[in-house]
Image (cartoon, rainbow, N blue to C red; front, side, top):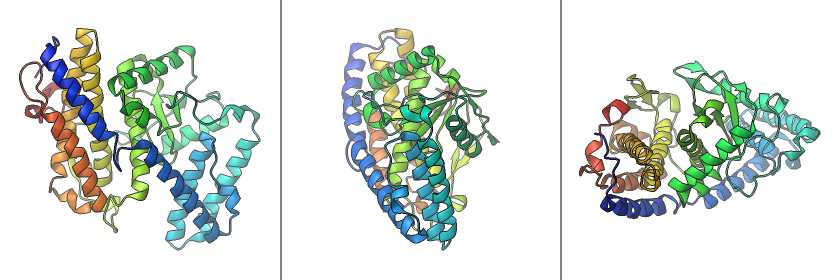
Length: 381
């Protein structure tokens, strides 16, 4: 299917109404209200830090929340590790995790170059680092990202990238584009991440890792393509939002183990036809992203003044929707459904409601978006 770039008025009018309704759905409720979700996550980490401090004999003040993005990222990762170790009956290991954070935080606090490491600015979207690419903090976080992220089974080699005026202008354009495609939801989603860390890599990819929460990582060449940069900033920020959701929600059954999870077959991979297999955790992450991505591109398709770019955005809408629908079907009674907890079923229904609503969209060529559920690869769209 090749969407008609002419976008007749009837299509634009119906698409705008549908977009507004789905955007309201995805920005409200227990899975959509980003401010409430972030507040719950902050409360969770305050409590978890106190519990871990008590269990390990650590001074609670030393692991209290901090408004500095890099320090808070390290603190949350350390609390996650300490909680796992303490829950497994290894409080000494949990104490070591907290001690490593305390030492790093002390080093950061005494580093004059980090005085600009403040909370988010008025833009309320992830900003570039305010330190140089060769600073030890930059290298530390890129090391965390590279050591925990793979592409095609190989670890990512993430090298430091400088933030140039051109890159900053490109990041600002990407944020503005995301807000044009998601006027209500973009601010909510982008506020989930505190910094976007650029890196030099072989491909214009991006990533998120639980080892460095609150940060997203984007290859520098991504910012040469405004639409792709907008997509990936939203994409990675959504991973942080879902991570925050998971802290207080029973997305999986109590004895869930990711390495033993039932899986969903995924017949696409970075433009290739290779079939991958996603655990329940990764399935939710992808389902969450593609549902929002379809809405982002629909918003861009109906607001883009250039017809050729509008046609490209509409093609991306079809692709993202088909992939979201793929996961909706897999979670509708498939084997992976057995891995879900009560809130996992609720999240499935919440996302599926958005996917089904978007599926009713009548495209410019007269077909319903729902008729293109098999268009999960670009060449099939």
